[in-house]
Image (cartoon, rainbow, N blue to C red; front, side, top):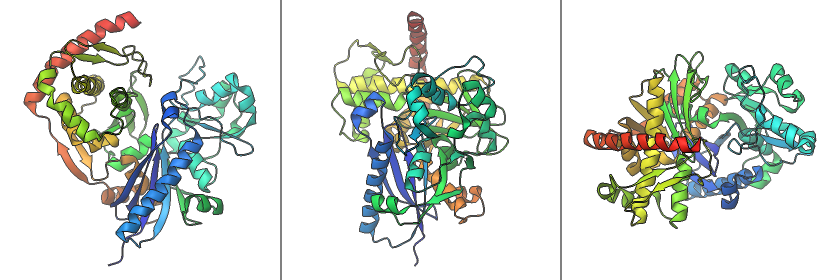
Length: 468
């Protein structure tokens, strides 16, 4: 029986790069996660070349897996997504300067932000105002996935989900408002389009076949929506890795300053998101301070949850009291009454993360977006202990697709469409996105967590006043 062709899909995250080989029939063949240098992740100074190095290692690791399996199918194309709104200033000689990361606070403000909704230009304007020498040497600005695709041989382009996104990227009016030169920003192309092919130099560096088609991926949260099949009003995607976002597909957007409303990948619909920038990072912080960096996540969660009954009612953990969304954990507050082990500390940490998620859900519901359940995407979705705990705390069912990393599945769908292997994006989603498991909340546990949540929320509101 002839094996289906396969696709190379990659996603540039905040702390690591994920990559997979996915068959054109929607089957996950191999997966790998390659971290960036730890010291640069912690300092928020990851370089563009770190993404490229991780990508090259990922390709080698994936090919080794397929070689062991005796797979002789053909690699049909590559598609890459990435975090944002991060921008890479690329000099006229092709050198990548330090990226303007989405989380590093290097942004410029203007008075009328309502008239200038761009998510990217504030970062470029910062460079122009604070580092004018670097701005003058910059020939073009590229986002994460655009830069890596360009390094592989693609044309320098700006990938947008659809035309409705143009105001959230840039236009002439906003260039003028920020005092920027529009020539430094490449032309738009929609996701799921051929944008080039692997060059001879890239083939030499990575081992990928020369002239392999490169298909435009897109922003990570959009590819996650595609890769979880969240395309209809009322559907929800909880995308969780280093950071987390709860994304609701809706007929109407939100005007709340606590939610980000953007056009959905489906024309005429909106994506309303509640952003949680620190959930994954908080657990990584716990792993670091307890010396468990190399320990398996499932093993850690199993140990933590064993002390669940003894922990309840004793200890609380309050990260990011000022609600600044900082990736730094220096503003955490502990209630340490009775803590005697790392498992008890771990329980306080994971409970606070689950409470963050519940708070975000309830905030969305106050705006009229009903959430009965969510489809999961990202690294956190791969831990069954965490999934059940989160379901119990939030009181919502959680569905995990067979390909848990929605960004990678979404890239595969876009590549199938761009290569003409399917008649539509919806057809690609139908054959790729399949629900593997559903976690239902245990109502007795939900009731107990609800009592804790009320106490936690009341204490948090009191403490917030001291940090205003």
